Picture 1 (cartoon, rainbow, N blue to C red):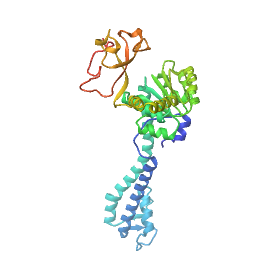
Picture 2 (cartoon, rainbow, N blue to C red):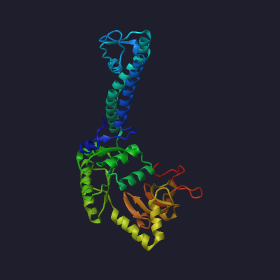
Picture 3 (spheres, rainbow, N blue to C red):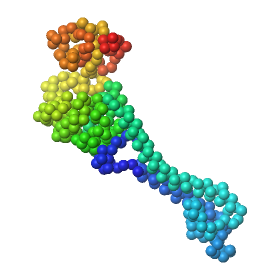
Picture 4 (tube, rainbow, N blue to C red):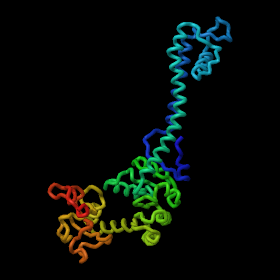
Length: 363
């Protein structure tokens, strides 16, 4: 039988998404089929009751309904005590060509239920083993609430495969939501190293920590950093005062949700148009987008302001410079650009890097 959410949350089991029905539905369906086979057999025997003889009764007595139920159950279960037997040619033919197939179906149904349970467990273990073998340089999402789902949606929309995303959460509703989105889930407390190890945090390339409690985020960040010294950790903080603590715990980037929301609310109040632009930048696939791209070969040596994209920052040697910084007056090989550009490629204004242009990295 599948492992319940309570057991999973306490032991940190890996649960891969599956499209299947409730085990109770499957068990009820099989039970009804078994009862249906018994009922059909009883009806067949009772209709031809004159062709059967109960050796415990006088020869002139025909089988009664109780005898029909008794004969059907012992026959289908292959017990066969032999006290009630078919004696007429029609009864024997019905037993050979009707009741015998029903007996086989009944046994297959019973054995199939057992085999299905064993096969389900074996298939689950095989899928988890294969998943662990190929899981490397993946993304771990700790907490699958509103922020976690938005993070996954952004990653998927930007080319990250769902198979390379693992969710860690201990809530039953979050596990169901993650499965519905086609994501693998490790259920359990993300502050425990054993749970994070099952999620493959030691081999993860990026970790996003977004539970609903700052103290849990700090503990999870400490545990992740202990297991993986090189992973890029992004943590969410509900309160600004907790952001420095998360960075000290090992987070590379901390996003303060209350400050971000408050800033957008303030901008939208002071300048509705500016608020609309900011919301546009945060909405995927529409209007404008903020993106990072490699420098093209034809752009080496140019000024950031001269490029088709609206460059707002330049990443050089893992340092971020504003586009007006004298350090990046001329773009050099290896630079990466933070740009504002159309979310969709337009025929009259194609986005650089979308038509097979060579980047300086490719060269």
